[in-house]
Image 1 (cartoon, rainbow, N blue to C red):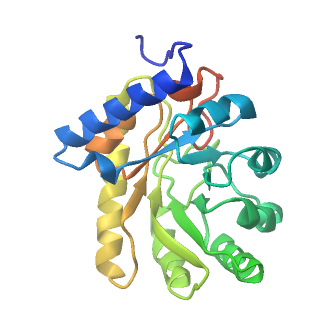
Image 2 (image 1 turned 180 degrees about the vertical axis):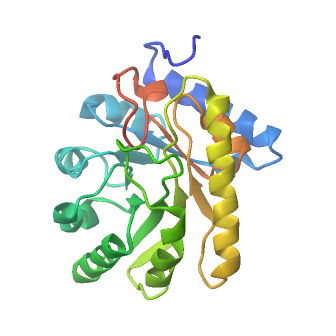
Length: 242
């Protein structure tokens, strides 16, 4: 299989293959494969194809856009845990809180405050990740490293939103080894933040997509966001999972 190309196989077969690769990468790193959560990123995928993955045992699904999730969530089993892996606009916060159990793209203290207010109003418990921008790409979102402490201070005051870790979307490259330094740096940032904020439950790292999730796991990923390797090609690398 060439880098960046994923064959059109059965979704159940793709899911088995991805899980085998997750297990292999975890074992190489001396980790329990069960410590890695697979989020199947279903952006642009039809509900009937998503249902195939759910029926094959996939528990977590990720969407990039609130609007698309709004149409899909009612059509799929209520057992699915939904993750927002794309950028969240302020005017979509209320809808996001109603649809998702986890938001991977918190990029400011203000957005975290808005999520907290909305989650409290809705009586919802929400998990969150801070998306960190390590590459300075103008086409992507994310907090700067120096903004992380401010966000964590706000997180310490939250009751409805629990900040669990960090997320990264490194520059796209078909060579997965090019992503390794970004993954390693994110893991180091999490460890340092945990030392500065010992009361915070910072134990998750959301990183790795179709091209590089094995490298991400070797570098400590606890959540990988895989779309094209599961559902097939869709031709974009600029969003929160693929």
